[in-house]
Length: 385
Image 1 (cartoon, one colour):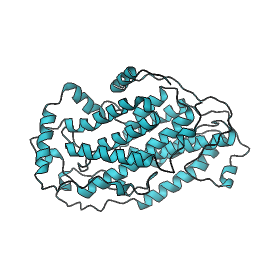
Image 2: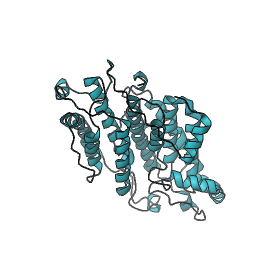
Image 3: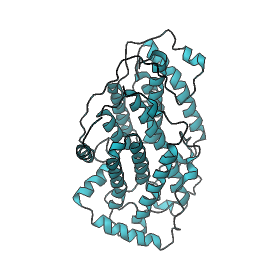
């Protein structure tokens, strides 16, 4: 895998990626891939004697990414949760099929459609061959069980919705039940909250707001464009680390097995990071800068959740850490993007500097912990074909 750093930085910062089709090599292997869920022999037996003429490919992954993005745009909600289930299910189906046939036999369409319907009832119905349908049923049984268990336990964070600090947010609040989601890779992401900040009535926050005001007033035209990008306002895929990773994976000679593996890692990690973010946000309920200092003119509206820590900074530091671990040649570029993402929220006037720093530290720490998780997809053991 070769690419000059200059060209990659340019393509990342302009989002002008060029797709180079990297289809999996249809070649039988003796390697067995480990799965996230455990499957009983009788469950795997359902695949016995069945086969398919289809072969899973990057084209199929891209197709379902487009469908997922389109559905998400029409039905705003927790994309982190959706991606975690979708990418885990796709990886499980691919690995089970490989273990059964020595190649990625079948179609990912049935399992992708089933998972998306958990979040979007309008997701398309799919008819496929018997093998692919059976494979989807085996995997979906695990996915649905986890989804139902998680949904039953999800509840609003025990925050006082009459708290004057929360009353400064427009309703409905976002992420109140995220902290109670079931983690994928960490036992209890809630235990890794950002440090307690100064109390809301501390003069510190007014001082921070003055810094924000000065920075926001001095935002350049280029910074305004990056604010728009990281706020997801430059197109349906803008400002999304899953999409940034996908652009990279699909434009390089990355093995299909490694693509589905890494996508599941990043998506699962993203959800665990979300849990820690919203647990911290609603524990401390820090008011946004423009509420503390109404003279601040924001460049975008602030989200309907508390300020501390910055979700963008947390996700970005975590994503850059994971991408740098698995794709170290581009480490500088990943962290350059991550810094820009976090800073863009200060440029926009919607986050304090401390929000960015606390989020950065939290995301980095969570990613380091995630890389030690025994549940992590075994990326390094996968073959480069």
